[in-house]
Amino acid sequence: MTDVIVVGGGPTGLMLTAELRLHGVRVVVLEKLTEPTKEGRGQGLHARSVEVMDQRGLLDRFLAQSEKFQAGGLFGGIVKPWPERLDTAHPFGVASPQPVTERILQERALELGAEIRRGCEVATVSQDAEGVDVVLTDGTRLRSRYLVGCDGGRSLVRKQLGIGFPGLPATVETLLGEMALTEDPDTIAAVGEEVRQTQLRFGAQPLGDGVYRVVVPADGVREDRGTPPTLDDFQQQLRALAGTDFGAHSPRWLSRFGDATRQAERYREGRVLLAGDAAHIHPPTGGQGLNLGVQDAFNLGWKLAGEVNGWAPTGLLDTYHAERHPVGARVLDNTRAQITLLGADPGATALRELFSKLMDFDEVNRYVTGMITAVDVRYDITPVGSGTEPGHPLLGARLRDLQLKQEGRLYGLLHAGRGLLLDQGGRLSAEGWADRVDHVVDVSEELDVPAVLLRPDGHVAWTGDDQRELRAQLARWFGAASGGPANGARDEDGPADVA
Image (tube, rainbow, N blue to C red; front, side, top):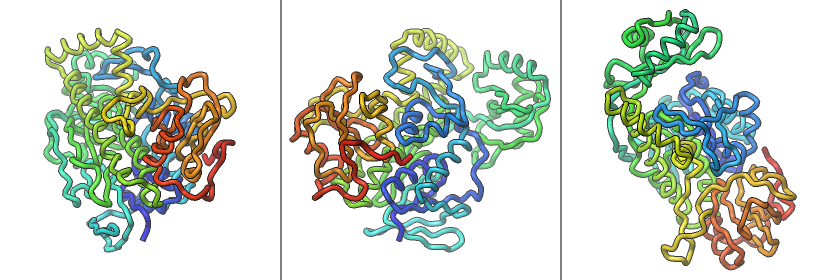
């Protein structure tokens, strides 16, 4: 029996696998595709995902292959300048196509010792009190202690567990693909700009060598959207809306997507959990889908590892649903709003003009950008013993990268995926948790609290200077104290860089 089976080898599944392997969890990834996808649906990492990659020492790998971009207030086709005073040291995105993102995450997972099995399609999933049984379509049987379904919007894992997937059906559909266009590039650009005056779900983005990423509204909504469109479907819609098909030919890949929004009723059923599109589907407006899934994995990985390794306190794994379900629900809501803004009717046009004017205010722009990039996500962490009183503003929020006087950058101390006590006064102790939490005595001029306890996902679990309060929070998030440092524990000199 292995520790965890991850069903689905896309960005969410691979990110989760790498997180689990950081903690020594035995992981098997089952991916039904025999080769990595060539479809570039996800086009980049937003600021919070950029932070995530930096926290694990992976950002340089992305920047070596992809360009930074900076677009604030990217909402419903409205683009505004990057807002001032956004709370991040990474005020940019990275234009990393999904195949590149998957390749980097797969390389990382393999480096850490993960087992990835391609061409393995799951037929059935069942569980009992001790584990999860999986049967593949070729009859192979596997068993694990836990299983995570990262197998997309049509998730077999979710269906096998009988988890409800309520929401709204698609009302519009869009065709998306990559293909060669023979028309003159200036003509393509000019016609595209004209069509976009009334059809914002239209575009032809040059990728080089005459190949374009083409998006065009479909002619109605297909009942079976699992069937990919044909080149003829694209040509017909291009001619209907632009008066020309731009000489489209030689498609690399073709797909369709709708504006359906659905969310799993629960992200956990016993020993089975859901992440990424298996837990939520929504239109790709704002480019949030891949990012949302990666951030699901980042939240879940250390918690599931704690459960597998036996140190997780009671209820820790349940905080995955409690924290991520509201985040997913908010993305569904904002994508519904964006689809409305992208409409071609007079009401949508008037609403878009009003919204554009509102976003000229920096406060509105900052709010929208924080929402789309997820840097404003703050989990509901009520202080122990405080009843319903709110805690420090940092509590539950992710902490931006800080410059420290001795240790360099804060995110450089998070590469191993462990908790971190940043102690500015040097009077606190994490003794008893040294196998799970690094204690660093250092000072940052950007941090106005005596000490901060960070979870492995970089969110603030506690601030203050009281040792008794600290011990309570260490136990709350990292379980009972152990007798002494375990293998690989580090002292105040800081963690070793495993990236």
